[in-house]
Length: 380
Image (cartoon, rainbow, N blue to C red):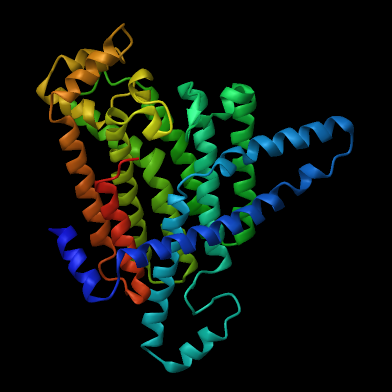
């Protein structure tokens, strides 16, 4: 129903899927250029060696730190941040320009804001960059924890250089992200973005703690809380930060946060679903990784409602021989996958509702809506 309504409204306003693709391509191309500039700046201290040994360190650290950036991802998180930045900037202009034409003239003369197609400030671009850097660092660390050897169809940092070096590379990227964050110079934004890293650590700890003392409802609540900390917090707080930098009303900042939170939860639920139905080739990484790490995700937790024998597997964290294979087979015979996709759909619709009052100049709100809808049928 929501999808059909959206398609009708898109056609009515002249916003086609081609337009969506163009907007996405434009933002990703701009971000890639910006990302390369910042990464080059981040490496300046490494390419000014003081000795032969530091020359080797500089070369190796630069190669490892840039590795995931160079093999490329979908840049989904920075794309969301940049689109939300444009939407919030338009909301700011809409509110104040409706009050006074003089305000419009003032805004048009502001050197830090462009009122044309790409209405995003430098600091908002920085938030987008930081979101990708934090995400990349978390991937490096996750691959060490999960003992993964493939990411995006390529060998992981730990597979190429070992676990110790991979941990250091992840720490290095986080340190550089912190430096970029400090350059923004807004204490409230720094505080909001800093919670992302804290949440990442909290979420990882939550996943490592066993579920054997929890009932089914509390177990699922814990799972969703971990999903927020590990995934949705980055979306939510990045969206909130670009909203703060747009100087919009608190209600709009909250709406931006809620959009990011709901989108992030939908994204993670679909990721957990794909872990059961994808192949390593389509996923670009090993599948059943969570089960092999002893982690019960939504498909398992939903399936356990129909097949209580899964509770034993969950309590022992799938540690015995054939636990993983048997659990996957049981999930395939249950409604676990369907219920997971339905829950992801609900969160996608929550994201759409959060931005319902945003202006839709240049179809930006429509594109944010489409990003949410895309999560429902995402294949990779």
